[in-house]
Image 1 (tube, helix red, strand yellow):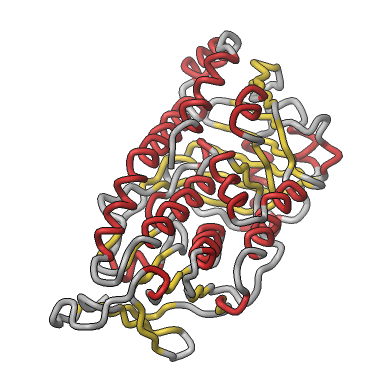
Image 2 (cartoon, rainbow, N blue to C red):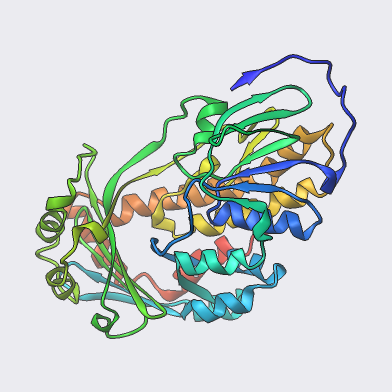
Length: 396
């Protein structure tokens, strides 16, 4: 990113919806943010690198704090049509012996349902609240230059446009972040693993089932008409994962697991349908620079161990949209600072929770994992509810 010096505030001031806004990244955060701005009268442009939305994606557990944003957008009933409500999840050891069954019914009665959804279904729900004419597919940002007054953007199709602000919603590997902030290293958790879909008939109930091993984790999450598997192993080396031998590695790592795991492993047949990833999070001191601001994973990626990354991204989108509705193009950085002030503490809390959970669940020490399994039998539902309550009662 290049910065050009000009006389500050030399251009006419634009207020609220008059501001020219570019949103980079058409995932859940970008679509949510765009819809919220349009609801307030803004006319943002959203660019997304893929040619069209498809059927590739994973399971998402949406917290009430995330799904209630869709109530305001008028698409919450559509979410209920595609999401599966759950009130219980079961934790077992790697042999398949139940350690504890937890109910979140009192939490859902207080805050609203926990909903597991297929990511493409959630995308389709949010898109209903977005003006399709505002989305430019198959388009990326290739260059960003900014002055005190404006941001000049060059797109992959060669066009150039001028904006009052640019909002990067392009994920943990954000190209926007790289162009504006430089190389910001991700924090590797020491965990990586695989996620994939299996036959729904394998599940005996429509509740979440988790199997905790030593340095290994195997989770099964149902949603409507689908069954998702999320696995993890502790591996600090960040080894490569060739597709052709992917199934062999999964089966080898979890061959001693019980419960429904053997049936799932036996049914694996297409390694191209299995996603592999290293689990990283991201902590940045500042989420904005000049007239460019980051939202969601681009600013504050969260480990999947807390299960709240998508909800956190939607919350941040809602807060930034709220701040911009009372902003103008002259004092835009004040709005960015207010956005960070409102979000930083909550995001840091969830990031800390996810890191602590990762160390607890994915411990690589046999003695520690045995002690963990023993203690889990006595970790009451009361303490479990308190954990959820502390995360859901806070304002965004």
